[in-house]
Length: 297
Ligand code: G1P
Image 1 (tube, rainbow, N blue to C red):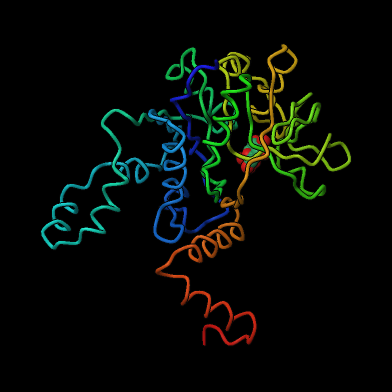
Image 2: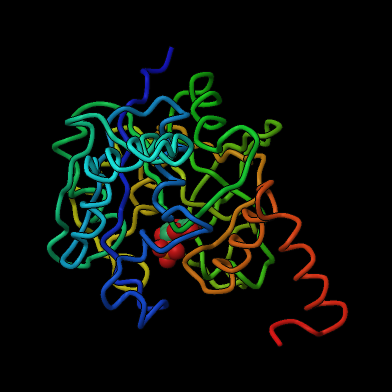
C-alpha cells in the first residue's frame, strides 16, 4: 500500500500583481473570499485529507500571512466574555497546532518548481501534497481527499486535472493522455503551457498534486523550462520518463481560478450562494442586477 501523505506544501511566494493595488500591503492569500482568507480554504481542504504538516513557501512581504495563523488569545477571550459562542467556534477552527506550520523563504522568484524544491529538507523521503491556494475547489468531498483516496489505490504521482477549452491550454500544465481508467487517466507525458497547436490534449493540471519524493530529486537539476522558470510540470514529466507512473485525477467539484479577478468574483458569488445567511439577499440582488439592470443604485 502507498505510504500515507501527511505533509503539504503551499507555494505562496507570488507577488499577486494581478490584484494590485490591494496586494501592495495584503498578501493575495489572505484576501477574503466571503469572510475567510483564500488560504483558509486550502488549509481546510488539506486537513480533511489527513494533512498534519503544513509547509508554506513564502517571500518578502508575507508576514501578515504568518500572523494569520497565530492564535489570537485576546480576541478569543473577548468573544468568550461576550458570550459570542458561534464566532468563537469559527475563530478556534482556524487555530493550528503548535509546530504544525513551517515557513520557508523562496529567496528568488524562480518558478513553481523551485518554490516546491525549497521545501525539500522538510519533506525528506516521503510522498507529499502540493496545493496552490489560487485554485479554489468547491466539492462535496474535498478535492485533495478524493485524490489521496485514489492515490492509495494507484501509488505513483497524481495531479488534479480537468478539461479546459482548447484555446486555454497555454495557461496550464497539460497532460498527454495514455490510458483512461474512469476518473483516473495515466499520463504519457506532461507539458507546461503549450500553445493550442502543440498541446497534447485539453486536460489541464489544476493546483493539487500528490507527489513522490523523486520529483524533488528531479528538481535538483534546477533546469529552466517554460517562461524561463523552473517548472514543477517538467519535474513530474521526468518521473514519467524514468518509469514512475503519473496519473491525472478528474476530480468531482467546481474549480475557481482565484488568481484572476473574474475567477475570484465568481468564487465569491458561488460561496456566498452556498451560505444560508447570505443566499436570499444575494440572490435577490443578482436577480435585480442581471434581470432588471437595477443594481447598485
Ligand atoms: C501553475 C502550474 C500549471 C498549472 C496551474 C494550475 O501555473 O505551473 O502547470 O496548470 O498552476 O492553476 P500558474 O497558474 O502558476 O501560472
